Image (cartoon, rainbow, N blue to C red; front, side, top):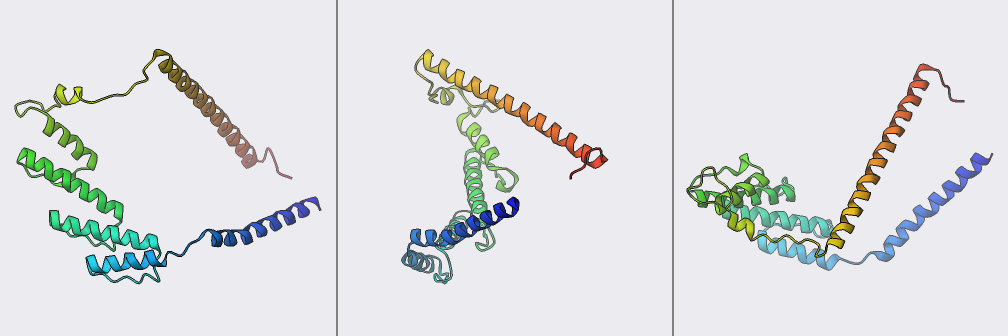
Length: 204
């Protein structure tokens, strides 16, 4: 009887929360129709694409505008065509960055670089080596000059450095303790499951 009572209270609380959420959201919402209309107008004027701003959210319109702009830049600068409707924005941004890096490397080395064969990190590493190494260096490596110009900020006093090191050591110890506790919990769970599966322990 108590269990039924608790379930009823939980159901009432859940219903109250569900009813309260829409009203809370309604109070915090604002009319973005002007922004949606302006964004759709800008897309039509810049890219010649007509989107129904009344059926699109502001986020959807902004995403469409960003993808259209990226596709346009890539086509103009690199001659590569993407379908803006089928290509996610992050994919377009990654492709554009790799194309730009490959172009800079090609200009520095006088050799063609296929951007599709390399990740952005690989191209950035290659670019750093090619632009900051001596032409006659074998193998290619970054000179000491550019490396020595890199500023590394460190705590100014030994006391502050020691305090930071102590905090990090305490965090490592805490992580180790939590990992050991997690392992013990998993072992207990596995043992309990084994007991249940073999019939040694039964649930009432």
